Image 1 (tube, rainbow, N blue to C red):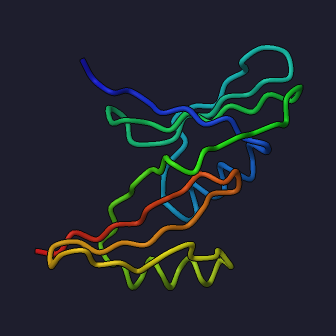
Image 2 (image 1 turned 90 degrees about the vertical axis):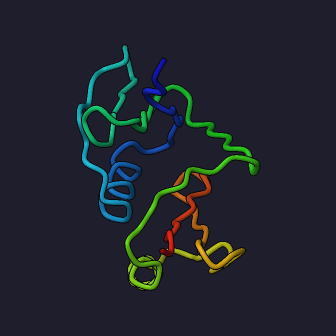
Length: 122
């Protein structure tokens, strides 16, 4: 068994795609129709777990709970922090270094999904 994707309903597909491409560097692997007034985009590396973004034009109510986050590993937390600040994205918490081997901070995507940017320290 392989974890193939995680789904997030979004308010604005183009805005969400821009966030995941520009901030996290994810590539869009495909964008398809999901039926009348619904579009779906998949982002991520081929053969890896992807993010599925669904925008239902008939339902603009998006409810992302506070108890879930997606973590993305970065080469440099300092550079990632600089990048999100340049883009005007608020840091929700951190940087936090709970042990000598990892440090991270949290931001939110345009839909309220908590995104954790993580640096593994050798």
